[in-house]
Image (cartoon, rainbow, N blue to C red):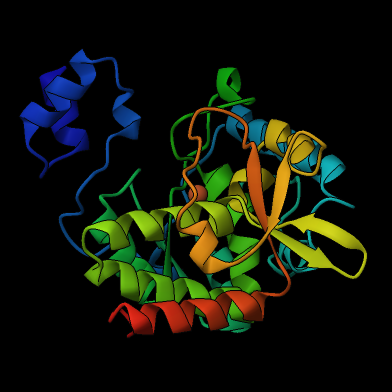
Length: 276
Ligand SMILES: [Fe+2]
């Protein structure tokens, strides 16, 4: 057990892992430190996936695509199309990276699992989206606490093809690298209520764009239901709002536009001394 944990997380202190595992924490949910540069774009080699793993992708893709029209925002649906995602199996990260690069100059970096936040922000700040390339197993199709490529690819990447979101996320990474104290808490909340669970008001009505909603059947059904209190987005309000990690979201925030997110973040980060 010790050896396998050491291998999985080569540079982190072993005692922290031993302690976490003893406390019942899933080792896949313990952040890892990178010990060198990750492969990016066309340098990423596609793994050979089993039929079952491609079947898992197909199941998840079709299930979400049945739910998302009328719920997901226009930019998200456009992104899925632009990136060529379909139910024909797990896409190659190199191909997704190429599509993103053409759209907004983002690339994809392949990572081994949940990253320590410093490594994560460092990649984001360079317009490299950290993504896993393995998928959840058949017994975790409804829910997995651990990162996997369905969340990373299907949940996150389509929105990085939207120019304002692409710019916001890079600025977010640049600021997060230098944040301290409560600034870090505020940025975590902002990330949660935008990138992971954001809503946007379009001409046709309220729509979702956050990756945590896109990759979850339960959240996709729940996010626009009467059970959720939807508050107009204001960055100063969002950063005061605590969030639920283990339950469906009771409160969400709706942007008027993605430019609003860029403008408010630029103002806030500058005021905080965190602007790039
Ligand atoms: Fe995520």
